[in-house]
Image (cartoon, rainbow, N blue to C red; front, side, top):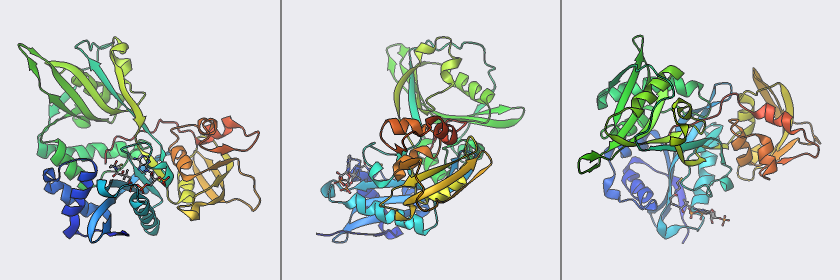
Length: 402
Ligand SMILES: CC(C)(COP(=O)(O)OP(=O)(O)OC[C@H]1O[C@@H](n2cnc3c(N)ncnc32)[C@H](O)[C@@H]1OP(=O)(O)O)[C@@H](O)C(=O)NCCC(=O)NCCS
């Protein structure tokens, strides 16, 4: 029996959430009002068969920071799931095609997501564009290499966190390549989920708040000895000094047997603050943000490039055929233009949308993708030239979960 994909209105939020959760093996009864309220911020699509929802996909409007601190409107894709009863029949494929068409129709040049599995989304033109690492320090040996000023810190109430954290996050999102804006609905949901059971600590310098961390303590006592694990969910700072002070705070909380840092930059400076860097163990180094150029020419024109140069790039894109062309990209640190290349131009690089998605934030060099066979290069192509052009001065990083 055929299914159809169509938008979801508020009457169907509860059913949408139930099917979404079931796809992840989660019990629907735990759905909260805040989760349903978040859907007002989203464009939701459902696949229906016989009037029942069998697949879910949504997105909310955000902005992604590209090299050069340029922000582009972006569809942040979320709530993707297909009922266990309807898998491998093309439901996801149909929803992805519909969603990309809607994003294009709204004039939004980018879509992004985080993936439950790294095997799902390249076929829809998403490429991994930022990496993230989890780190653990097992045991109580967490001495610092050199003293870090203790700083002025305070813990926030849940209400205070609701107001203060968005204000502290926003300047970082504006300047950090790969970071996403977070609409108020995102914060409302995060606050209801996280701040009831975690702590928010704020750092202050010279009377001005300049960073925060969100952490939780999993409490466990063996007779007479604490085995507590401190889990750091987020650390946002406006300066290296504020970041170091917050890290010191987190490393020195009492009664903690191990510290776990979630979703950190792979090159986290934490390692360099420790007297014994080897106590820091990487638990997982993985793809985090996946980027899908929906309007490739708009994206290539918007971002900045590390050096002034011009490359011809052929894009092959069946799902978004308006991208399929050879483009001449002339860019520099100050700006860029992307135009159709003159007819008959030979491309320097050839790629699908997923390859381009991986290059957009400068998180990987084109030469690596050429070597891996992800993208193609003309014979005799100068790899250093492409690497210099596309590289970013700052490693892209996204901390936002959605
Ligand atoms: C991932 C999921 C959404 C796929 O839905 P689906 O309707 O079965 O996907 P489709 O039938 O449209 O599959 C399209 C293609 O992707 C492949 N595919 C689907 N899920 C895949 C997976 N998890 N790993 C690898 N390939 C996958 C299919 O084999 C098919 O390949 P083909 O075009 O070569 O035949 C579904 O399995 C699911 O809900 N999983 C649990 C929740 C989840 O992980 N959601 C994603 C959140 S980011």
